[in-house]
Length: 333
Image (cartoon, rainbow, N blue to C red; front, side, top):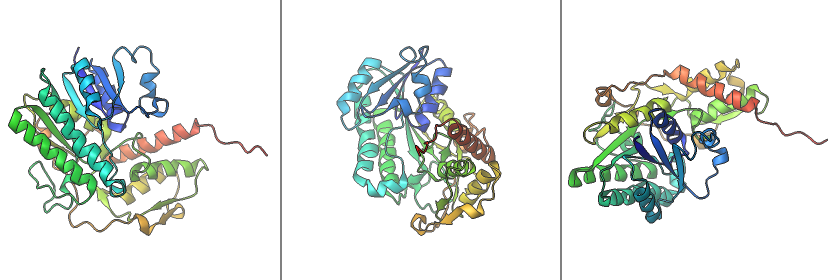
C-alpha cells in the first residue's frame, strides 16, 4: 500500500487530495497545527468515519517553523510521496503578513528540502507553487519557461520556494516537482477569496441571510479551474520517472463579472440590486493577464474535467445546501 504525507492537509487542496489518494489505495498521513480544529475543517467527514480515521488516514501535530517536528514524522512514517501544500495562501493578506508569509512559504519549503535531502530513503516531493510567481508577465499565456516576476510578498515567497525546488533537484538529483497552479476553486475555498465570497453571498441573499455583496473591479479576469482536477494532476505528476515543473491551468479566462452573473442566476436573482462597488477592493490594472499553458502536463494525460459554468453552479449549490442545514439564531423576544 503506497504511503503519502501531506502538509496543509486541512485546506481545500489537501482535503481533496486526501480523498483522491484514499480512493487510489494509499495510506495518508497529514500534518496539522496544534491549534487546528478538525470539527470545522474540510476533513471532518473523514475524521468522523471509524473505517478511515486511524486506519488509512492519520494526522500528526507539527509546525513547519519547528522543523524537528517534521523530521520526526518523516522518519516515523517513511512515506513514498510528500505533497507540500502548506503556507499562507492569500495574496492580499500577504502585504499585511509579509514576514509570516515569507517564513511559512519560502523558509518552510527550504526546511523541508533540507530534511528530505538527508532522509536515507528515496521520497518523491510535490511542491504546490502559484501563477503569482509570474506577477506581471511579459508573455501570455505563461508556461514553465516564463521568467519569474512576482509583484507581491506571496508571489515572491513562492518564487523563492520554486527556485529552491529546482536547485535541489538539479544539485542533489532528488525527485522534486513544482506544480505551478493557476486559480482553482471549490466549495472548500476560503471565504475571503472572491469566487467563494460571491457564491456564498448569492446563496445567503436567496435565503434572506444577507442583503449585499461588495466587490472591487468586476472586469478583472482569471484562469479559474476546479480544485478536484488540480489535485489529480498533482498525483499524476509525481508518478513520472523524474521530477519536473508543470503548469496546471485551463488556458481560458473568465471575469469576476461572469462569476457574479452565473452565481445569481443559479439562485434565480438579478445581481444588480445587491452588488456595490468598493474602491478599497480595487487592485491596480494588470498589464498582462495571468493565463496558463498546460500543454506540457496535458501530454502526461491530464485535462481539466469541469467547465467554468458548472464549477460556479456547484459552488452555489453547495452553499445553499450548507446554509439550509445550519441552525439560525432565534430572537429570544
